[in-house]
Length: 469
Image 1 (cartoon, helix red, strand yellow):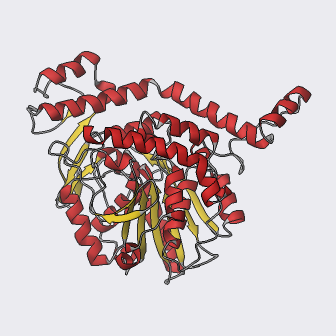
Image 2: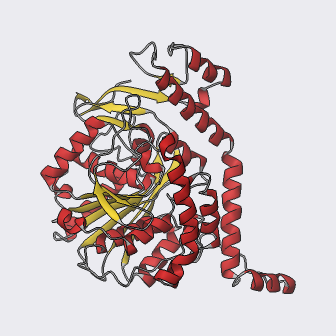
Image 3: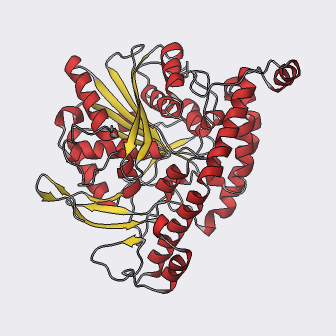
């Protein structure tokens, strides 16, 4: 099917896989046969064969992973709920000792999942909710620090977001959203908008939520390697574009006003235009962690496609943390050219061995490519501005020993850092458990909030001021 936009054939080609249509036999057969015409779980118009074994192997791995996670959808959800309930049970009852006493007395307080005090599993990796008091408005680090805290807060429920923004940050939460994903046929994309009324009343922050580690659909979005190729723009990741609000006919400038669903791109664009009508001096930041980072930069990309000059001129910056690749080299060139024209600052933060920014592969098969500067921090939180993060595709045998040694150091550091930097850097038991798991999969624990938060607070990056100027 070809998608059309303003009379142009916007989507020239696509490669889409559907794990729910894939049988186990058909999946295995894919490895030994280049014929894709008979594979009903692969949609690749114009291609009868996939002769490259590496390409078929990566499709096999992607579909296999998605099938596994889809089959684990209910157990994953239950495990996530159990972990969240346990942590919040400890919190509202004052710790495990008080919980035991309350249990004996029959006075156990049960946490309410929709309350402002209920915290997500992700939040238990980094319990800090206060802004860094050492970073003041006007500092080089201020916007990146605020952007990260907003990215982290986006994982929480609506009441928690409003409570933290209003009571702790002394700012204003303008709105929280739960957007429709047309491909998944459900609301799976979350974001919120705040106004920095404390330091800079003209600054608006749009924060997209990242991957829920216990949501099978979120994980499948990340491991999906399907893409759409848009005319004059390049190839874009299918899962990320769908999460942002891609329609059946591509990216129309407007969606049907009679629709009962809200889509992330269209509703946030409408909200920002409304803000600018009231305050012509307003400017905004777009940010997100993990999947949220992918949505943040794609949001700007679609604004560019639609030539939304009013909004593009008001973007103060795009700040992403642990962001995966979202498109190919052509899309990267398109974005670099357009962002230079609109003078848009794009800062892509990567911590050490984080696996997510190194996916999907940047190779001759998948052709995914990062663009813009990489603000790379090592495990001592020393930063550099690089064109590409080291070990760009993660699975390199030469990096196995260095990655595991670094994971050992990160575990040791989690114990000593409170003594070196202050008690606010004390890590939760849950985070320490993730550090131990990181001894086996180093890139997993590196993707969590703790180290990105520490990088914005403790990190040194002498080149940043020059880069921003």
